[in-house]
Image 1 (cartoon, rainbow, N blue to C red):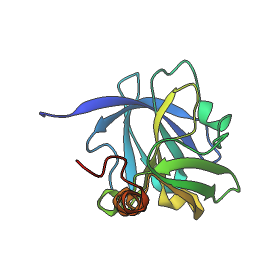
Image 2 (cartoon, rainbow, N blue to C red):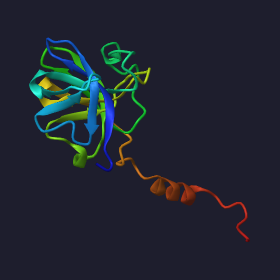
Image 3 (cartoon, helix red, strand yellow):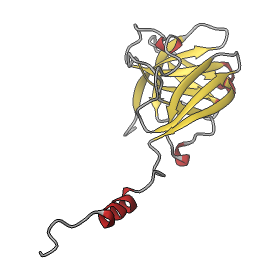
Length: 165
């Protein structure tokens, strides 16, 4: 198994307690379920229909900090799509998705959350858990105006100081 690793996760579920454990990366998030290895060594398969979010965390002891930090206090700095996810139970969460269509997963969205404590490194939200996804902004868009045209125009408008040279 070259290239695999076990990542610490907290799995928040609808109407049930939160589970903690490890997900093998890649491969732990399948097309329709999560394969979670509990700290006791038991393999639990959780269907996406029961899953609200999967938080990839630094430490189990800090708990679910994503519930306290659901929105950015100001415009995010990292590049990507700034989105607001609305869950089917009415809750919402903001985050930044990669601005790359090749990274879209058919089973859900992987985003960077607005967690100032950095407990949550990444959050995976299954499509089953969502009612609505809204794009709030595009951060770091490559479609900015080119500075080259403005620089050429300014150079033409300037007077030469030493025309003899």
